[in-house]
Amino acid sequence: MAVLVRLPAGENINEWLATNIIDFFNELNLIYGAVHQNCTNESCPVMCAGNFQYLWADETNYKTPTKLSAPSYVDTLFDWAELQFNDEAIFPIHETQKFPKDFVKRVGVIMRRFFRVYAHIYHHHIDYVCEIQAESHLNSCFKHLIFFAIEFSLMETKEMQPLEEIIEKLREKDSTPN
Image (cartoon, rainbow, N blue to C red; front, side):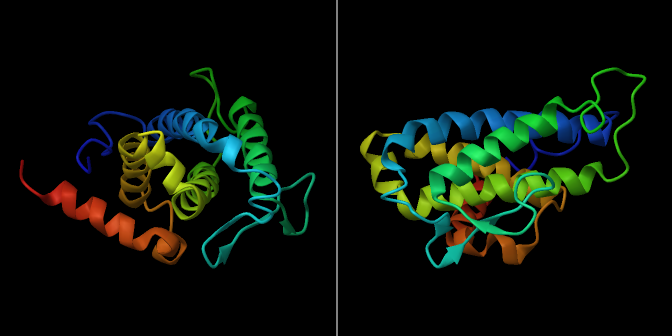
């Protein structure tokens, strides 16, 4: 997997980041869709992953970090991400448009927030994921996201701490010869 996330020769780094972050959004949307019925305001009153609590802040609706239930956090994240993707000043759609100078930083923010949803699912909904036999799919999508984040330094190691054991296992499996 590590080889598959590398920037292809001749490819524009920003185009590669943009294409992949949208793919990660689509994958995560499907995965969360599979568990959302078990992730309610009552069962998950706080967006967290074990002892790690995540607050939401953005530039418009939540100017200060705010505690949200997990489903509210995920809904807010998905809506916010779609706004980012649809903003041509951030994600240009014409070849004549340029990516913003802080594009990599913006992608990093999106990746960290996507990671938090995976962390929540692994910590609080993995039993259900296994029950519906979707663990392989979850692991595959998460592995793609995390290897990409590592390859392009989109997340700091400390931000990955809630899933460090899972990440280590995925790395070990990736380095094992077939």
